[in-house]
Length: 131
Image: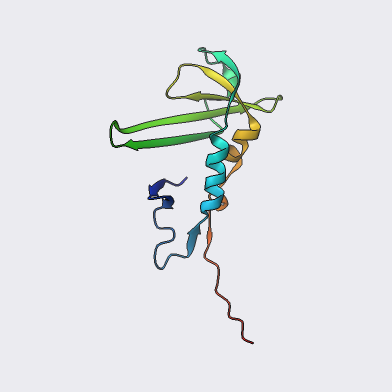
C-alpha cells in the first residue's frame, strides 16, 4: 500500500525521491497504469445483489481514490475487486454505485497482482566512465 498525490504534472509518493532517499518513483509505470485504467469498460452488469461467489467478503484488491477539486472540494471513493472467474473477468463494485459488474482481467490484473516494486525501486548507483 502506498499513497500518491499530484505535484504539478508529476505524481509523488511521500518519502520517495526526497533528498537522501534510497528509493525512486517510476512515473512511467504509473502513467501506463492510469492510462490503462481510463479504458476500463464493463463486460457485464450483474445487478444489485451480492453473491458469495463474487469474492468481495475478502477482496483481491481495494483501490481507494481521493479527488480534490477547487470547486467541489475533496471526494473519496473506492473500488473493490473481487474474485476472478473462469472467463478472466473480475467482479467489481464501486462505492459510487449499488451495482456489481464484471470487468475484464486484462484491465485489472495489474491492480490485483501489482506490487509496490512495480512503481518504487532503488535509486540507481551512478557510475563513472573514464576515457
